[in-house]
Amino acid sequence: MEPRILDAIQRLNNPALDWLMCFITGFGNFGVFWLLVAVVLMVIPRTRRIGVTVFIGLLLCCLLCDGILKNLAVRPRRTM
Picture 1 (tube, rainbow, N blue to C red):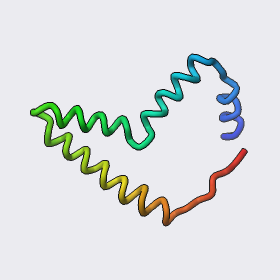
Picture 2: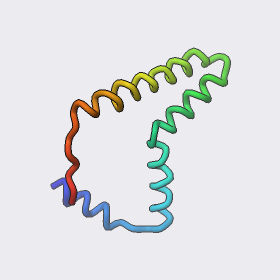
Picture 3: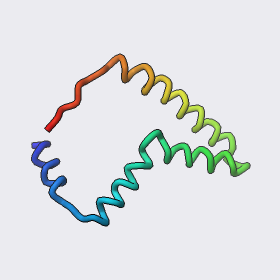
């Protein structure tokens, strides 16, 4: 069932939407969105502590999840 759903989504083409989705997806690369959130929170004096906490959480996640867990649980990706 899942491959059929993914195939149906793949057939939806529109150059403007393709660009938009690539742009939105780019925010997920390297936690760019959360880094921006952390920076904005750190700039505002009232939310500085929360911004530092978010930033430290991002660092720990990067080290533990991307650095250690992903290498321990390596799984081959399925190709279509």
